[in-house]
Length: 461
Image 1 (cartoon, rainbow, N blue to C red):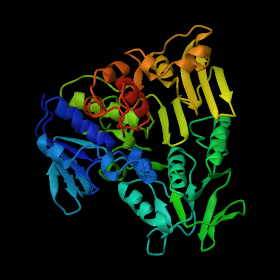
Image 2: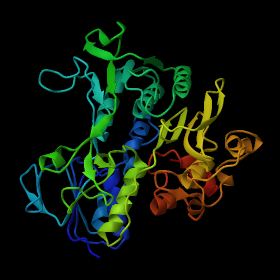
Image 3: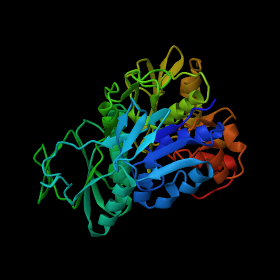
Image 4: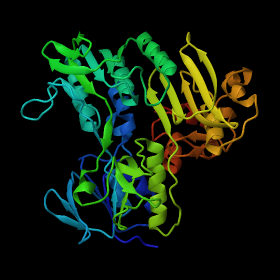
C-alpha cells in the first residue's frame, strides 16, 4: 500500500526513524522532509558528548543528505513551516511556497523552557551574551565558542540534561555549579536517596550543587538565587527542560493539550490525514520526551501508512543518563507502588532499587552500577513473575559481580532506545554494522560498551 505524498515537518530523531522505516517498507518516492535547521539530522542526545569533547559534531549525524537523495526522499533543510492549510492539504513555508500532502506527519519535537529569571533576555529580545540554551547543534557550537574565555559556569536545572551539561563543562576544565529548584537532583525520575547519592557523586567529581534554590536574577555581579546567594559566573546554561512544540498544530486548529492529541493510530483526533510522533505527540494524556517511545511511534506509524493495523498502547518510561563518571538508568514510573528491594553502597556511590508488585518488576532505579541493567530490563519488559528470592538475586551476589553483557541470553534487550536484543548484536560484524542494521548505540549511547563487548572487540566511538 502506498501512503501517497507524505510530508514530514521536523527533522529530528523521530522524523529520521519514520523515514527510515518507510524506506525499509519499500516507499521510494513521495516523501518530503521539511527541517527548520540548516544541517543534516543529528542525535540531540549526544550533544553533551560534543560539548564534552568525546564526539565530533559530524559524528552524531544520523543520516546524510546523500542518504535521503539515494532513497528518493526530498530533504529540505532550512525550511521553516509557518502554517498548515488543512482544506487544501498544503503546508506553507516561510518563503510563502507551499507543499501538498496526502499524509502530514508533525514531528516538531520540543522547545526549551525559559525559566523566570530576570536579566536573561536583553531589551531587544536576544539572550544575554552570558546566557546559553542547550537544545540544538547551533546552541552547542555557540557554547563551545564561549568556553576559552570562561572560568566559571552555572547550569540551571538538575534533570538529565542539566547533569549531562554540567559534567561536560567540568571535564572541559570549567568550575561548574548546578542550581535545582527541587529538593534533589533528577526529582522527576528518582527518589530522594538516589538524588542525594548523585549529588555526592557530582561533588566528588568537582561540581557544586544547590538544591531547593531558584535563580531569580542575572546581574553584572552574577546569578542571584532566592536564598540570597549570588554565584559569580561567566556562563549561564539553561537546562531546565522543554515543552512540546505545538504552535503549528494549534494554529491550524488541531486539538492540543500539552502536546498534539493523537489516538491509538497516532492520528490527530481532528484530522485523519495528520499524524504526530515524538516529543510533540500526546497519547493517553501523556507526552514522552525520550528516544525509545519516539522511535516506537515512528515505526508503528510507518507500518500503518503502508497498510499495517498495529495500534499504539503507550510507552514504557525508560530514562538513561549519558555523562562521564555518572551512570543512571530508570525504568517505569517513580510513583509506582509495591515492595521495594534495594541495595546501596554510599561509599562507591551505587544504588540499585526495584519496585515489585505481585512478583513483577514495575519500576527500577540504578545509580552508579549498571552491570545488571540488561537482565532487569528483560524482566521488566516481559512482566516476568519472579520468585521470592529472585529480585535480590538480580541486584547482588556473586552472580551479579561475575556477569556482564557477554553473559546475556540472546533475547535479552541491550539497547532500550531501539529495542535491540543481544542476539541481534551478536549477528553483526562490527559497530558500524550494528548501527546500520539495528540503530543500537545511535540513541542515548548508553549501550555502546555492552554492544562492543558483545561484538568481542573494542571499537572506538
